[in-house]
Length: 281
Image (tube, rainbow, N blue to C red; front, top):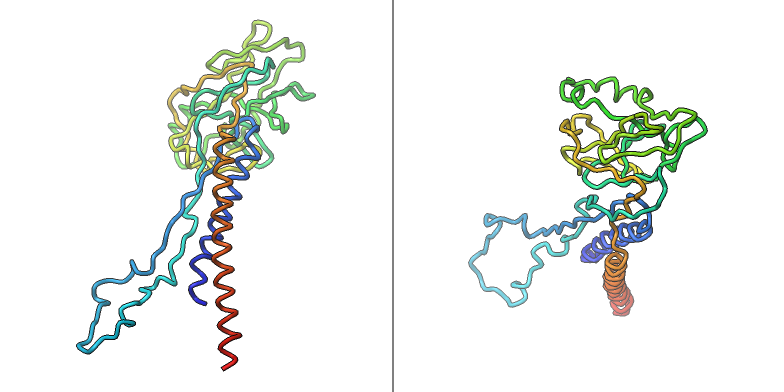
């Protein structure tokens, strides 16, 4: 049953689609989450055949000889790739003075055990050392020197290789902090730090790591122009997942998967009948 690979490849691709949509639905209420989408690719064996493959000898032809598969049994569909939709999420007021929502293409810069990561999830707090940290406990970093990145050669500047020096530290007697749209943090009338908000030349070069964090593998991808992203205190950016649309897409993907399963089952039944009935003769 060599034709079985055609629906089987579709089932594998559709299962991946169901998993992706289900993950989007599960994170519909995760602050700063960006939904993923898949791109599919159809492979047709017949497209590999050129005109030089056509060789019709001079003889009589029977009707059955005109019904060739032309390699259709080797056709398939597969996931060509996945990408993250970075569309702006809705800013929701929280009333928490350490919640920061971004409006624009920028990302917060945070320090994780695996190095610098970037996130849109602005639900921050202060740890027992009066450091500004994320909800996972990762320190939030102060502003990059964009000129140093622009003038850097192949090696990353020290502020990227040694980000510990940019951890935002609040004084022990700090009052309720305030932050303006440019990311400047003030407390008791004194400026504490400039919050690092980074924009990228190619936002699709970022890779998801989990917990709403992204990896940037090339520091040259950081935009050296002044960021245009605005920071809104007391707001949180919600997920850009439309729960109704994603649930509709999930139901549709599940139905496609079930239809393909029926085709595979039909192939299995045909194969079983072929073996059992032919063996009687």
